[in-house]
Length: 423
Image (cartoon, rainbow, N blue to C red):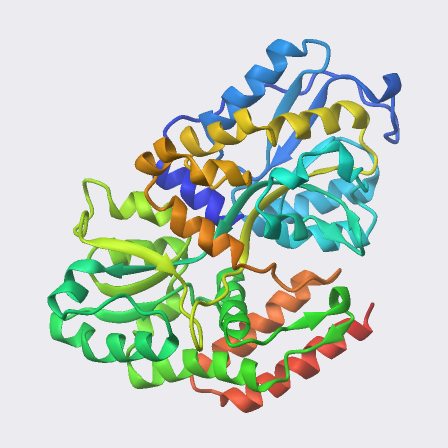
């Protein structure tokens, strides 16, 4: 959920003031009061006033089923660790969890979150790819709340000076980054290349955009050892080797890469939609000089990895009936509009992306819609953390020229197979 925390820092303005949970816990957890009553919603820290106002609306209408927000640490790793500690205890301290889309499979496979009834939620109103992030083993285990997809930001002013259109293919991206960027003293292309979850996302997008995959059968089958994967990882390695990906980009997370682009140091940047507002701000050196398009691919439009978060019910929730009602409320059209308007975060409801008034306010919506519709989830696995660490390490070694792309992909396939066997 790093993109959510970055969006909160860059775009939003008020801090949610939290009250402690006043309901009495049932020793050892367990459903009480027919599944209805006060609730807790656990989420990563640094969320702001837009969510507070949403929950205030619920609390006014449901005085006997009030929800209290529990903020966990800002770090995604620490948030995940604290959630898992609580879930393993079976105490049912949390009723609802706002989890990164990549955690759904892991939490479901471990039995920490409860399966949900698909007919209970407006799944047909969502952008179709986001629903896949909420399923595991053919069952719905969460409900999409916020989505995200990577986009290619570009310096429109510089491409206009060269009489060029933004790239639709990797070949065009590489040529423009290699030949145009040096003319204007800027770096060619960057993404999020520090070894962390962002590098997993960037690497997966390259593999997907070349027509490949990483895992199949919910993580039981390894599919990464392919020409497509070697091509995708090879493009990143070649970019650093040939200089059109600046070496400093190997230290970039979302925020460092956003700052580099809006300071005018890059021709192209892969980042989440939140970066649009920052690059349009008063302190941006490129305000009015940039735009965004869907990611390019090997032979045409590429495939982004889906970001965002899902809402899940703790398997030991004290008030699961109320929790499901709250999730339905947070995924309603009215609440999803507040997610965008007040929170500047990408909603999951499809109709919002085609609202002319909202498009005027958020001009990136059509591009984001196209990106989400062409996007795919991160590799699904009940051992996702180990999978992600392996992808990061191998891709970093390829980009730093410690291992060639072919050897790197073979090594990744072996490491992923070993992870799958540990199941």
